[in-house]
Amino acid sequence: MESSSKGLLTQVTQFWNILDDLAESNPESYKKFIQQQLKDGQQLCAAPEPHLCLQTRILKPKEKMLFVNLCLWKRIPAPQSTTHPVPLSVGRPEDMSETSDVYTVIDVAYHPDVLQAAEKDQMKKDQLIRMAMKCIEEQLQFTLSNSYHITKFRIKGSVHRMKQNLMGIQTDPTDLREKMRKELTLEQIRSSTVSNSDQFPQLLLPKDQVSSKTRCLIEEISSTEIEVEMKTPAYELKIVADQNEKPLKIELKVELPGINSVSFCDLSVSEDDLLIEVSEKYRLHLNLPEPVDTEMTTAKFIKEKATLIVTMPLV
Image 1 (cartoon, rainbow, N blue to C red):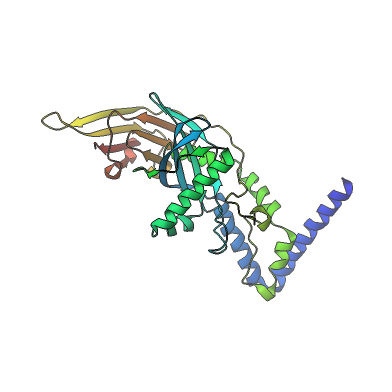
Image 2: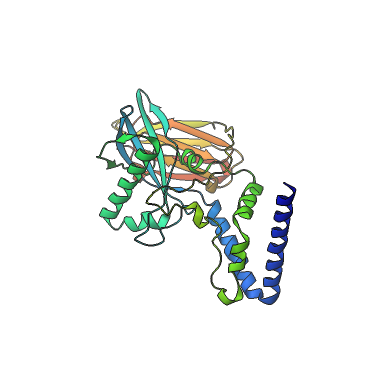
């Protein structure tokens, strides 16, 4: 143990000496290196974002409806070339229910470039969906139906739940710094020499973390999950009708004391439910009384009253 500690101390000393030498001999190269680490650090902190949701069925071990959220996540590496495997990350399955319907939701994340490129090519999109379904089968020992369809909504469940599932909740920035410090090896620093000043080490995913075999899973990067108790805000929900008493839209007013900007609000609306979350403060999940048009839904924030107004036209 003592020799191991001495070896680590020696390596850390060498680490700082190499950085000091680089800063002194080539300040421009040192500056580029630090800027690259800051940029990569931002990428490590980036949260996954919803892209599309598909519906299929689990056939075995127990038949059940399945929703798969395909998400964009910068922490997932892009494939090295068109001949290399496409990395992705599969989250834990979560069972949910609406009235008497019980279904499972699974989140799958790809690098943003992968999913965005597939939007222009229906065949590529289908291949990515089939790959996600195959990985779910292999990793979770499920048998899925071969058929699927893409839903009108981008995500099933809340955005907050999806983020927590894939990445956990990062509460202490020192945890992130420790992770970055561990993954930045001495060899990576040595590789950033003056003779190759335009090439800087990749901090986020060392090569040994991505399987070179024909697999479609990557090592999951997650931070410590800590449950945060969130309050249910006061709200008013009403159906607005026309002169003939025909229902036209649903209007929701939510009071959010202490919030002074809409940027703090995370709103997710599906055809039959709505979720509003304000980080570590408020959470409101409602089942809507009538199906709504998600594409025509609008939201505005009245700063003076700290009130969010969501208008949802009926289908």
